[in-house]
Length: 483
Image 1 (cartoon, helix red, strand yellow):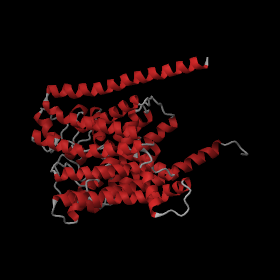
Image 2 (cartoon, rainbow, N blue to C red; image 1 turned 90 degrees about the vertical axis):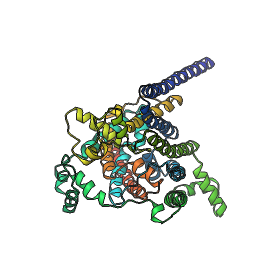
Image 3 (cartoon, one colour; image 1 turned 180 degrees about the horizontal axis):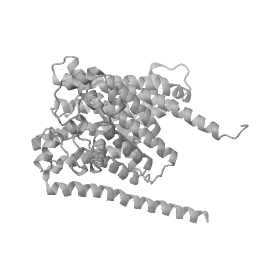
Image 4 (cartoon, rainbow, N blue to C red; image 1 turned 30 degrees about the vertical axis):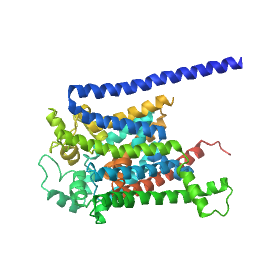
């Protein structure tokens, strides 16, 4: 009887696996149809498909390695587990090396961000919010692909919060420094924009645009492109800081347990190196995911630059115009088109497009009206990448039998929405998220990414402390009297 039950259970598991394999194939088939079908109608959709398939690779890698910045911060500060933080540093090192090679080849699409305290503030707000949601910007996308409705709520709240935040007025307009207002007004912006009225426009035009941006290779004065890219941008700005952080993580969170496990009381230098290497290789899945993410993120810049040269464009807005698609372009006839791994801005565009269809005017500001535009989701190549991140994660989740539609409780949904709103606000103040303001910046020689990481880590630490306090308070209230 026991053997019969075991066989039956095994058969059900096998059937479920076969069903999920078919579902995984259906996900790939859908994206193949979208990609091939659009390219057949117009070869210029190849530009869209490049974003799509790199997004698919990112989504599959993120799901496979359970790769999430929120998990890295939460695991370190809440339970002292360094696995995810180590994986992220591995990805930073690899992405920086590939980015350096792409830069030397003249195929880089990266643009450095201005360096200022706004990165610290935005990172702190973003980090505080992501602890509540249980997922960063990319983590929420891949968890949506696994069937998590709470993660979907994070994506939606983050997206709509951004769209509304850049156009909101009221009390925020009243606290704008006079120097921002004067500096913004002096830039003679187009009359269609409400630069002197909107606080976020004044924040951009009157403050951020006045800051300097630089990559370390230039700051160190290297004349050789190879030295600038590999020594300055990669080694000095990414590899060495990542190694320092890995040593710090080992010393603070991993070393004690490893020494105890191996019964070492007076470890030699060689033993310390073995311990550090044990930490780095502790999770093969996370390490593999970091490797794939780092290499793919670098290669995407190469591919996007090659396609820009092929089509004779510098921005997707030019491609859309040539295709007869002009609705949703900015005043400069551009759309958001970074040319590398990026999230949040394109989701803000998607939310703004929905709000515009509902009658909300969001194109009278710098963020949408002048820089990024509000194209239809079907005409937004970077938004295709976000959708395919979800698709890539779904594909991998089906293959691993890990896809499950998960409905949140009211409390979890509330945390997800509140955290998503904070992440949206933080990403707009910080000019990006854990990808655009950290991962893609530090790996291309931009030191502003480390400022964002410092803010995000600090905000995450405060978030963990707050969340622990909240849980303890809740448990104390629910505990029976006398216990």
